[in-house]
Length: 158
Image (cartoon, rainbow, N blue to C red; front, side, top):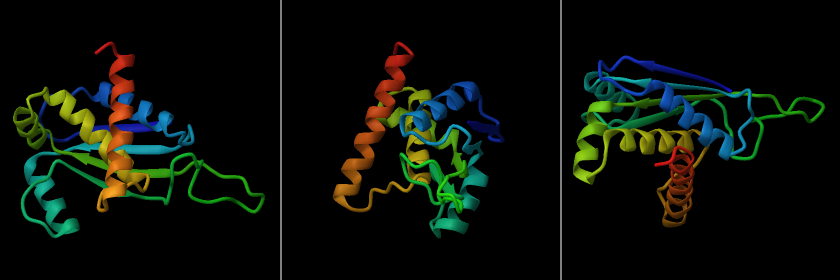
């Protein structure tokens, strides 16, 4: 699995830890081991620009997901070749804003690292087609998110 993590935010973040979490999430969802994912940390100005351009909403947000291929959990890719074989795919980009995550972590009473892990997991689930607009979707997505984070933290002894 190729997971590229870029930090353009100016904030200190555990890039290796986020990459390991992303790998844990993708493995837990049985995404093809050769799939590609990009995670980008940005500052509030860059996040505001993305949020306004793509979501038509003002100000910065915590996480945005930009899917590239139409993937679903348990599928090896978004499509099959003429022999019915599936190929690995580019999942897309998850963009995180550490300064927004830090404020949210303080409000929630937990560490910024925990908030970034939650947001990264949430963003990956969106890349894979999960949503939370409807109550049933919300239950499914947030239940899966909680389970993935719990297994990640158990694996890490936290």
